[in-house]
Image 1 (tube, helix red, strand yellow):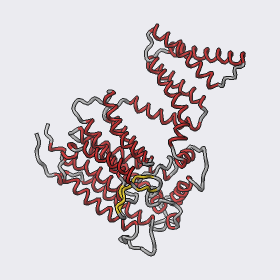
Image 2 (cartoon, rainbow, N blue to C red):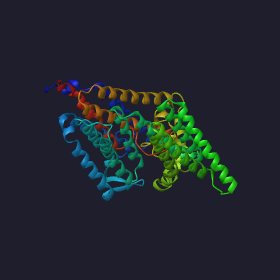
Image 3 (tube, rainbow, N blue to C red):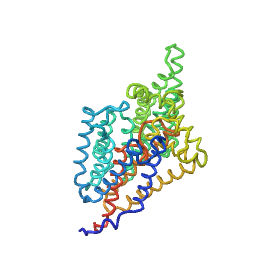
Image 4 (cartoon, helix red, strand yellow):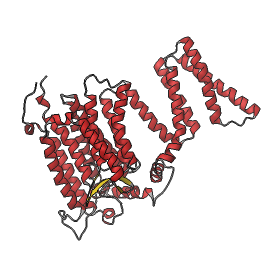
Length: 474
């Protein structure tokens, strides 16, 4: 049963106000980032700040039309919108223009648009549509495969465009799955894979194998709660290593520690599997598969790193991990950004008084590195205010998502929050050197129409769904 309500009286005006403040601050900071004394008017449309005003005005018009569309449209046509975006992601690979090494833009005269930004909306809608379907059980292999397809197909197409940063954003949807019942063990497994990838780049492989074995023993104890079983397994492994080491030394086979450890691990695993079957010890085979996968993954990291990532991406990761120094290359942007933010001190240098900004020391300062303009001109107080505003905005959107009566609206809401959260954390992390530079915009702040419009559409679809949440009576 439905009842009609006045959507304008039910709109979350607090969320709208925060959105407008963020957009306004973004526009003002773009003006500060590319300020030109010969074009002092913030309404000068020959400059980026003037063009951004056009994008902002268009975003407000788009927000209005998004809000007046019937809510059923977003659910009924979710798959169609997703299919159209997949088609555009394929088309841009063929007909798109390459910008900064990424072939991800359609160009119509002086107007350019990036489908990858809007594909996030389509993915959030399709994911919400599937997960809200009656009788879908998330923790089944069938659901895993379909959810993975919805998320990874656009991510893969964007990766093929050589836009790795935008492709990585799609992993933020894992947070949506967790809210909808995804096992915490899957999240822990994902975290372990990321940790293993990083460790494989900075540590010796033998140390990582020993670490993986230790983790497996800990998990084994946690699952079975029998120290005796853990001690037996550990004892078999130690004895196997000692025997194989002795054979290697006595016969001078010249085997490295890697091969000794792997051979001992295989031999002891075979023995313990037999014992576990005889004494009905649980989870042994599953944990051994996990350990084998960890070892295979560890030895494949170098291949993936060297063959699937570009040279500049490899350098950015190495720089963050402290494995490489390139102060006048890939480190330059980040170093200048940190200098700009640090020079702002507690209260900043003042509006339009940033020297790092004025003399163009920071490349891409109006796009990917817009946050350093805030730090330099407004200092700790300014960055604290902006970060706090983002946090409050995310908190408000989470509250909106949680109060939805339909599962579609709730799931979509968490999709919006997850994407925004990923962009905010990674972009700010880039500017202060905590994460590699992957080239994603700061929502509502970075210059550009595609990202602003995409974030606007995402947010206002959620606000539209929220405004009509009371139409459904149960």
